[in-house]
Image 1 (cartoon, rainbow, N blue to C red):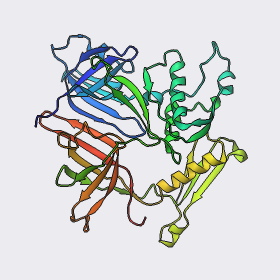
Image 2 (cartoon, rainbow, N blue to C red):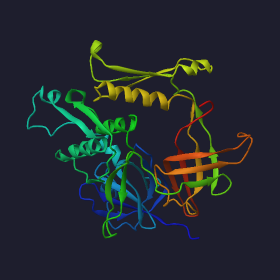
Image 3 (cartoon, rainbow, N blue to C red):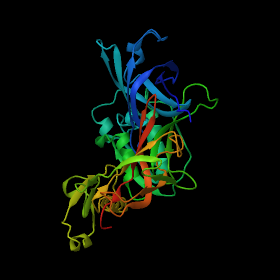
Image 4 (cartoon, rainbow, N blue to C red):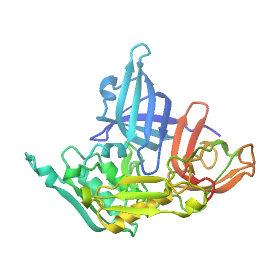
Length: 377
């Protein structure tokens, strides 16, 4: 079976015009669920460049980079950093998915001309009884309505049937990226990914899109199956108890005695030998009791035991291939008895991150699986 061919192209952020295909080595990029992926690669400069201006071509925040697998767009995002080495004549490129752009934007209405010192603090953006997917879309639409803020993000029309109330006060200067993450973190919150899809004609720069689950993203039909020693090469099993919590606090908008705080607790853990462990998370824009209670319950459930985030390294060129697996997909993991798992392991898993390491002689993809409770359920 022929190995897939990876190519990389740089485009203009504002116009999405492809500028040049660049030969990169040492490429790594990942595609996480509900967060921003990262890209790194090294460009060895030579006479093959037709654009003839690597300095301009790699200008951070003005240029974007796309990764293609056999002409299929796999990754896209803004170039945030570049480092030229004159001794090696190389440029190290660092980029982040479109979500990273919205980590640099605030939830604010379009500002008036010449705002005074009180203008921004007095602004607010409110969504009452709105489907959570629509809130996410409106946040991105609002950010793109500002002068210079449109980076060409398109949207799906998914509906989650979960309605929310959200208010974002100007004086909080909430990051759009943070507001999106908070939506994903609430109980029943939707999965989100900023992604790339082919141009309608299949020719030209990929389109940029926000995909939102209903509320979850994932493949339709049968789950993928990975077996260590078969289509999966190796695995890691890192367990972390530092994020465990038997009591969770969710704080909302307010000052001093007026700060609303919801609490969720699992006292039965104490009878199992676990101590009281507490965590607190602030949710700007959350004001109602039901919203905060949902956050507290979701936070406590997610942290109710030490968790393991298994990773498996798979070959990207054998089924299910790298093109067939996506963020949010369900799978079934089989680990035969070994020195660590004396009884083996077999159970359902879900892909929450994909780390690609293309090379000339192999295609390796490391899949990070959704946190599993380790030990007593």
